[in-house]
Length: 386
Ligand SMILES: *Cc1c(COP(=O)(O)O)cnc(C)c1O
Image 1 (cartoon, protein in one colour):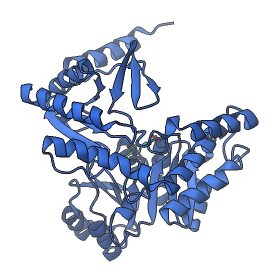
Image 2: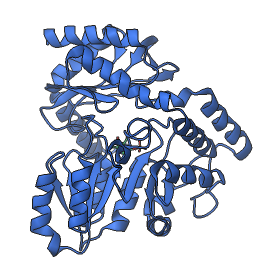
Image 3: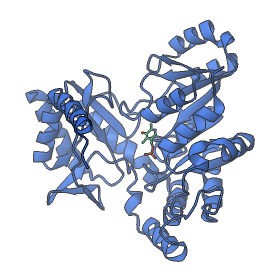
Image 4: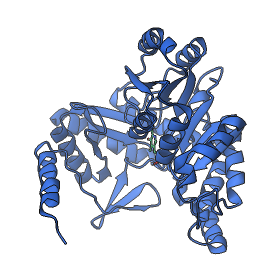
């Protein structure tokens, strides 16, 4: 059955996107070991995967996944609160709490589900959420779903956050101060010492999204540990799908907060547990992260080789953006990288603000130095011609 008005609606929306060069298309992409992606029969060296340590293909991680799948099956069978909380979760949550220096941890189905689940439990209509303007879509969605008053502060601008707190904190019951630890599209770090001081002064609860920090910065422990002394962040969330190479999301917090979330977070209670193989893979990967500082140091070293070679400011994380402006320029540059054998996905609005389309380079422990050197040459040529 087709509904004409419905299809007309979809076609109209799609035409508007295409006119602005913002239409997206799925490209079948097979990720192979060694940061290689195969597309349409061609092998490209990928600088667009978040598998920063190559752990998704690590033989021990894959073996742990296969073994758990054989033993416990392909799916979890129910929500964690019913029968979907395989025994492997206990160990995984203990590992996360250990690495983050928190009392407890809770694992969700994904990072997205973590943020849309956690934030509405901690903040409601009487409360204030202060959030960095470049925060990830799922943080903003979680904030909006909470019905709290949501105010964005300028990116990494703690004094702007201070002004807003000064003006608005007293009118609200609780306040959540939200930022990414490492920004996914900028690669920079949040000014956590200043934000922690603010949170203390105004009785706000500081929350970091460490999706791109775990396994990469702070000796692999995340953004709180990238500072000396380490920053005390009571709510540290992140994902198991990037440097950990598996899937799932987590929040590290006090035992009381975690117990509240087990009871109240809707995306936890009403969504099926992760497949046991996924939990086992994450657990094995975290073991490697905890015990192999050389591996953990590699993505940042690779990113710095790249920024050094191009005379850019030294990378602070595994992510290096080069802003080109228009969506068209980003698409054209992406095509030229592909011709040279590299996968560098162009990033366009709404993922980034209008006029800041960019090339986003994500470095992995798996990248070879000579490939990075060739990438430097190709990048310099494309930028000079663009
Ligand atoms: C990727 C990402 C998420 C979502 O995590 P998933 O596990 O992929 O759902 C959340 N926050 C940030 C900053 C991210 O980059």
